[in-house]
Length: 384
Image (tube, rainbow, N blue to C red; front, side, top):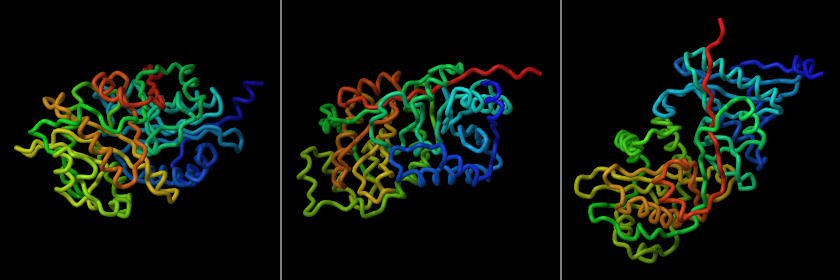
């Protein structure tokens, strides 16, 4: 019976957007059903861009049982993605109704990687990463859906375990419960805090990306590179200007007595800057020495709600400037400033559990909520 059932299931590769749309709508389960069509639309928009780029390697696989969609996965090679410093194929948006279906899908992904000369594959990395996040969710299934954080059925991790994939990197998402971090109350005199308009942040892309690369002086298991910067800038551009409206009778001195905070607020037009991204600058030489890039919860925007939730996605401090309270100061001013615009909930996401510096800095002020695992598999060459 099992063999007969297996013969019915078929897997095929497609670039047909109508087929992909139908498959995603059939198999992608989202806890808030109102978001499903928009999430599917964003994945399709991403795929259209990649399908028309001849230099980009991406394959969509669908598994059917007769006319029923029972499995889906995307395999790709993103030139800006690195694992431990090396280019590596990935799979994402994996959904399967059984271990048999998952095996078929992952065999296709493994062959995709081999075809392009690789002997390793990792995932899930759910592109666009700002939407789909990374890893298989293994804990926190009762938490509210959050933009930029991976979600999946509970069976996926078990399937990958049984198919010989190894649990390689563990990422934690935490609720930031403390508004003020003590270390950020006193800032080195050399440091100036700033908020910039979107066009000015974009103009500093090269400096920011170089700083980010140098700050991550250990080899990250999953690093998205320059492509991620463009994605985050598009997310900032999606937020309407009405979000940045200040409270009536606004006065910076009502919110803090820290001189560097007041200086930062008074040095800009707070209704025309990106409050999601506080930046630290050496005031004497003008170079960026630290930054936090957070993501607005675009799910709320898509539902027609006010944005009240923010995802702290990326934090970096330039080597040589650690221990000066920069990270904590950026957190403190970031929490207060986004609060001007109605942000009430902050979650730090995808914190690698082996990044000891980040764990020691963040975890004392937070409550763990979700856990994600990125799996990987070493591949044997195909038999001739």
